[in-house]
Length: 368
Image 1: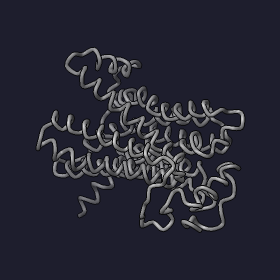
Image 2: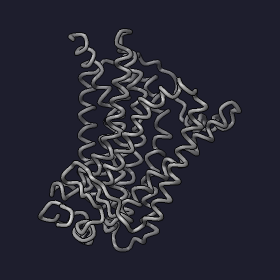
Image 3: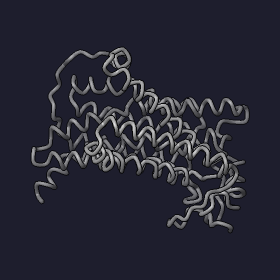
Image 4: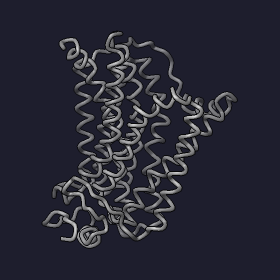
């Protein structure tokens, strides 16, 4: 027990960094969708057209992975040159500043500040491989398997918790002082906490190498993937998959809000359930299925069933446009019918005055 507690104290700063890093992926899904594509377009001002709002919505989604594209490899090179602790501090400090800028952009109603913070958060979201390497170095052989499982758990918590936190903490019918900036302030505080913990509780595991930085590494790796015959096909397949994955997660939130009047909390919970499915597949299904049928067969099976499932879901959505799917959730504050009188009248009437208007006095009981 003593050795286990010592192991947790050693690796906990890195585990928190991984959780905070993975939060950023889905945290803003409910927020951006509501502000740019939902009922709260008053954030953009009266002079912004629907086409401009749609463009800003897509830009907000695009800037995070664009930042990751340039930042991930650069931060890895920086960790080799200056040490892992310094770069983890840069990542957590940068994430805290970035999410704080996004929250300030919402409070000040500055689209430029919001989008700049979004790009900066992607640029700083490179701590996962660095923290994983640090945990691997810190782990004795007897506890290496346990620590790798803890890494997966930390990643999973962030993937599931991110959209849920973004939706629930921006739902003013839960708490009157919640708004779209609340989950971002919370994420900034968690990143700052991780920064302090790494600063005082983490021992660097790799001495600086002093190697030169390659500022164009991201572009070189990307072009090599499509010019190397042995990996070209896999690169194309992976690119197409990521395109479909990104389009689905962006547009499913729009569909839920515009067709079925989902609230931010409902969008966050819906996306969180999808993240939970991803975690189950990553931890349980993929390792078992790989041993059973092999990598290639699993890839073919996954892509074909995924395409068939999404096609069926799109067809179902088309046939039920304007109708509300029924839910029976255990949470008492989840409306069992998203298109109930609350959703159509109270919530959307409040949207006329923007997301900072006064919330209804009572909780959103269906049919109340």
